[in-house]
Image (cartoon, rainbow over all chains, first blue to last red; front, side, top):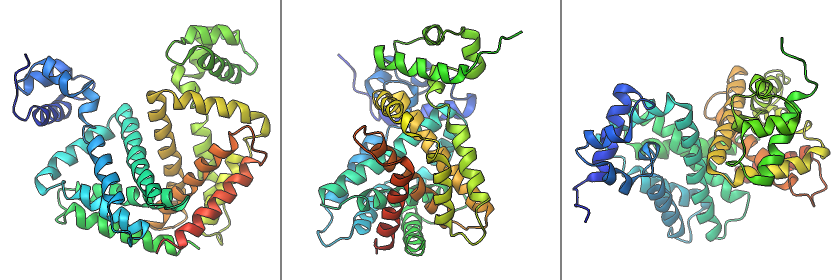
Length: 190
Length: 190
């Protein structure tokens, strides 16, 4: 029988990022991550398929949050208003105590091409979840995928700002501002 | 001394795609690709770092074409006009005899998550090349990255249409049309 380990998932994520930061992603093994978290390798593999997936643990949850927020937005909401509500649903979970963690995560990913590829795939997946949800609302192409791309672009632009430790604004504020800027720029592209 | 092999690069790409289609990407080795192309493994590694990169051989050339077309567009061109000129520079190289090849390439990538990640990374790289070139023209953020994202979105939408063997239009026509549609949708997002 597997022993229940409190916060195992979160402990593994923290341990992995600490090790990746200290000794590099390539040099770190699953055994070391489990050790550092005070857990077993078996527990690790109950939560993640490999060490890479530890860094992208949030993708399914985020995709689901985006999809649900868009499909349940008021029927009067424009596509971009629905996207904005969806981004709020995610960004609110990035509380201030996660800022330093996110900044380190960003650095680890930037230093490894395999992780950059995985991150690009995640970005596409999040945009795809929003596009699917907009289709479900009856938004036609290419408006649906365009609104989703604008939203995801705003999210990543804001993430870069938020992960800067000198920044004082919330991720939600930054994302809303980035989306407003992109909407204004889109209207004037000519 | 290395023997000069005519069209070695192109022969390797064709052989790789044939084998990936016939027996799957995972099951195919570099040795098999070289054999099928009538070349040696050494020749393979003079052209590509691994079997995966064979499928993304065009990325550097495409990035360069996009960048150059944008930086050399007339100074009177709007950001989106410069992006359109850049897409023309790429799409014109996708002649009709490449349509069937592109359709198979698309299928192989769709069937493998590692290749999908790599493809997502390529997409980001192409958008980045256009964004950099627009910055060099003095286009500010977020207009530069937005115009680049619209352009790359149009390119991939058009690619999906063009790779359909029943489609009769050129890739250039389809991409221009997709960009026009996205521009119109962007102006009405509200």
